[in-house]
Structures are given as C-alpha cells and as structure tokens.
Length: 229
Length: 229
Image (cartoon, rainbow over all chains, first blue to last red; front, side, top):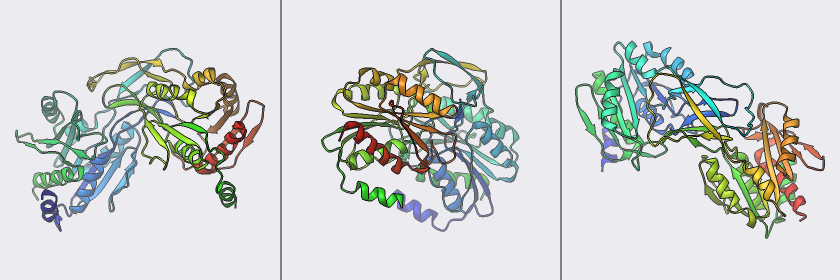
C-alpha cells in the first residue's frame, strides 16, 4: 500500500544530508495577563511531523515551537517560544544560516496592546481589548530570502484556493501547503490532513486524506526537489 | 513517608460510597472565530487528579472538562465542553442530583461579544475586541445550593489570602482551595501544587509542596468530613 511504498521509498534516503532546515510548529500564545492568553487551535502535530521527516532525510533540523504537548523528535534541536514576537526573533536570527524554512506554526496575527502584570480581576461589566498587529514572519522571510527554500501554510475556512494562491504570491514562498480546516480529517487537532501543494509556476498537487506523517514525507520530497538535490 | 502513609490511609477507604460528585477541570476556550480563542493556562491536572481521588474513594464521579490532553481516569464519567457557557449548562443541569461539586476548572470571565463564522482575515491595522462577561458558575451554585458541599479554587497572583477569603464568602462555598500561581511548583502546568484550604469557620490549613494527586487526596478527606461521613 501507499504507506509501505513510501517507507521503502524513504528508507535510507538522506537527500538532505548537509542541509540545514528550520521548522516552526504549534500555535503562539499572546498573554493578556499571567494566566490568560489569545490562542489558536494548532496542535503542532503537522510541524512536529515535518521536523521528524526532515531529520530522517538527513537535514540538521531546528524546530521553533510554540507551546504543545508533543515530544520533540529524536535528533531535532527544539527552541521553545510562546508569543509571535518570540517566534519572529527565533526564526529571523537563524534565517541566514539555513537552507529551508517551513512555517507550519499558527502565529497570532494580533496581540493584546497591554499585558497586565497581575491577573485581571473581573468586575462584571463588558470591556474592550485593544489588539495590535504582530509582525508577519512569513512575509519578512519572503522579503529577505536569497537562496533559501521557503514553505508556507494556508489554513483557511473559505475560498481556500484563491486565498492560498494570493498568499503564495504575496509572501514570496516556493511552496504553499493549503488546507481547508473545516473539512473532517483535516487541520487542527486531527491526526490526518487533506492538503494541496501550490507552486509559483502554477503547479498544484491535490492529495487525498493522509496521516500528517505522510504529508510531511511528501513535503520533504518536494523540498528536496526545490533544493535541487 | 507521607506518600506511603497516605496510601495506607486511603487503601480500601470507600468513604464516599453512595455519594455522587461532580468535578470541573481544564481551562475553557472562548472562540473569536473557527481557529482563534481566548484561553488560559490551566492544564486540567488538578481537576483530573480530584476526579480520580473521588472515584477511588467510592463516589460516582462526573468530570465536566474543558479541552485538555489528559486521559479520563478509569471509572469516571466525562462530559467534554469548550466554553464557559457550555460548562455552565453542564454543571447547573446536574447540580440537584449531586452531593458535592468541586470547581477546579479555570473558567473564562469574559467571552468575545461576537464570534465570527469564518476565520478573520488580518488587515495590518489595530482593532478592538469587545468582551462580555460570562456567567459566574461558582456564584450561581453558591446561590442555589441546599445540602451540597461546594468547593472552589482561587488561583491568584497577588494578595492571595485576602482575595481567597473574600471569594469564599462571596461565593458561599464550604471549602476554598487557594494557590499562588506565581510560586515555583504551584499552579498552572505544574505537576505539584502549594495550596491552603480555607473554611468559612475560619480554619486554614497550609500544605507544603505536594503532587496534585496528594492535594486531591487531602481534598477528598476534607470533603468526606464536610459530608459527615
């Protein structure tokens, strides 16, 4: 079956030997106070599976991870962060040393304008929370990239293909993984995913429902192609 | 040591046989849209440990749980909820049938006034999020309670004792578990906790750092006392 043939295909493949890869994973948390935060539904599973597949393909792999309950794959170097700003710093400072960046993390677009030092006490009335935009990590990488292969993700709930293609061009990525998170068996919290790979040359690969590990292996194969190895 | 003596103390104890208990656990999530939410740092470990200790003491135990990554203890009936409103309904509809309620969940005081049906697209500008108060589950239980034993938690970052005592009286609880979540080895995400038990009669028991399972066993012993068994 497909799992076995993939396993055979990948057995002993160290295509990415000598390459350095950086993967982001998980959902950033943006604190309102010491106990509350703005979060999102990313489990981190897709990014952790990618880190494992990159490492198994021989790449020196750095995982920049927002909070998850997952175990770091063997052989992978993990840098733990909480917020979008921390992830921005962790990724940008390492960008010039790596050959490929795969941005699988769900990064908060906004953070609270003010972070309270003590737990906010409720007073029973309505209140407004001021939100300010976080830096766009993927767009910044797209602006700065020289020879790096840059992979982005688009998790959408409507107009998937149009939003994903738009994102691919705006962010200057080499491969965009699109998934409709409203589909059963796809996206947040799921062990499986249903994705399409989009390329700037107009190619589009639609995959059936697969485990996140299988998606990761297909992704690593495409990254190796893009790196010309 | 204390663990062994507690284990001996509890071995075979089915003090709560014939009693029905309800425990809440985890941190509620209040959606902004299909992927984003307001959350909090509760891991659910304290509540799950309490559910296990109640079940081991012979109580028929219902666990109303916000999202966690924890396994439901054997023999415990679990009702999964996401939001404060769902938890409110799950707890209030069962309150009249139970003998004890232990509110270990971290319930969001506020929820977004509007929940977007589709993922909110960023536009790079600041925005405000309107928040409206959630119902206060513990206070409502305190108003409605007849013979039930009601246990609340106060997780504070400052003025712990004053805030906890105030909460105990305002919410009409029979036992309040106070913990300073800023202490190392206490509170959110930790496997241990450092708590005090406060009672309306003025009694206060300060415990040293213990595992959450040990805290749960001490709590069940006090609940049995309060139930007069």
